[in-house]
Length: 404
Image (cartoon, rainbow, N blue to C red; front, side, top):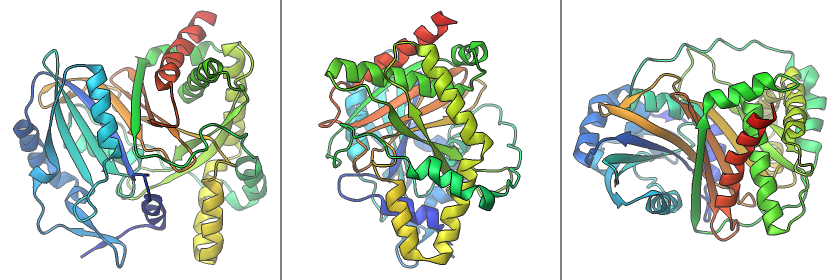
């Protein structure tokens, strides 16, 4: 018996075309040397708790069905060795550019031996079968060995229809400035990452002139990285409009479905004061959350899918256009407590998401065990200097801490 994909799942699947891939990626760096057979044994013992990982795509009707020829060795693979960070980043870039086989379940784990008796697990999973929140839940079920998180409270209705005109004006009618990131997607990927203690971002938010969330600080840090990159490239430091995915998952729901919406935020890049940038971002996100823009847009797109397929396609095309936003910055919280994988300490958890046509850079943020990590994925031919952005993010966090 097949499980039909939702309209949102189908929309995400359709984005995979040309040089754009449809998967996201989690990089887990684990203490100790673990070979591919050890990882296969662990996954084999736990995969029954994540049935979607044994299902393949059926095109007509668009659904997921059990793969009667499922073989774990096709999905948990020996990824070879990487002597250090440079080699690991090159391997990540190759894997992000590699398309998952649509005739098989849409995921793969590549096991890479690292120096210092460490092991990297590069887990790619197609966004059509799991958004960021669901992928993190799957990771807990499949790989993590630690305390489970508390259930999220259910969300309440907020009168979305009455808020629709103002939400569309704020989120979809405002035009993003022209950007060097507005390029057709090329075939190569370059990856970078930077991390910080989560408590440092919480302290910045608590000490800011206007109380800021961790995600506000994340966006301010990204703004600092972009400002440095544009400055070193000699480009204009105009405000950059970013799309911020918002999870609409509630406790007790079907974990398989994509349940994301979004809001758009203008990152100020002109002035030198990092605190002023943070305050401006906090004011803008607070307005979006107070007006429930993300929930309102989710209702709008769901209603369009029932009203008119042509109108829905037009709205989707506009909502993903570089005229609406320039850069996607997602943030998915992971387990707060220290975790073990394969019986060893989880040292690092990084998240990466694929770029899109005319959006040559993507930044995904994930937290785990008291650390927060920024994962950058870029079109290698369109975004020179990805290391400058990553270093700028780290330095902006330091500048914010020093200014409070």
